[in-house]
Length: 252
Ligand SMILES: [Zn+2]
Image (cartoon, rainbow, N blue to C red; front, side, top):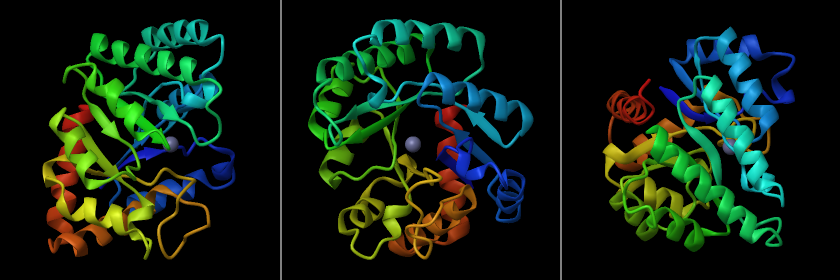
């Protein structure tokens, strides 16, 4: 298995990162995309990836980082990427959950990262919260030149199919295991299997039966198990396909 989205550099793992990683190995989780979202976490993702070979780092600026200084921040990101090996740009995107006051900066910062991803031929890891139409319109404006993944996708099946038409992958995490997750379960069941990825978003969004507790990358197994039931396909076969999809997208 590959956990395509985790933040294991967070303080929640300070005490027991080594045992978290050995639980991954025990559960057949072989690779983890370690996703940065700010200057500080991009650096942490780099540092940890040098220490543990299970990690593949990304670098990006989350919409909550979009301030009036977004141009300077973007330039700093470009410089960082020029000097460090990364496997994806992100996470980046649009988020109206907390505020819409910086809508212009959010859009500009996201577009700049999309352009950079195209220029560097890297996939983009997209975060979209309460902003599905605006996120989609920006991605669509790049005319299919952009490739990447909609991380912890929570939108409709129809919208997922539109992203797939643009060449995107759809990644599902812990919420697909929740009893009341009607739409994510529908997406898990219906989207083309060759565009499906799995993730944890650790330490957030732990799957059932750990809902509300700290999430960790070995729990990606529970996401895989749930989707295998929904699609009526063996765990081994689904693992083989989703692992293959992740390796193809991230070139890992
Ligand atoms: Zn995340």
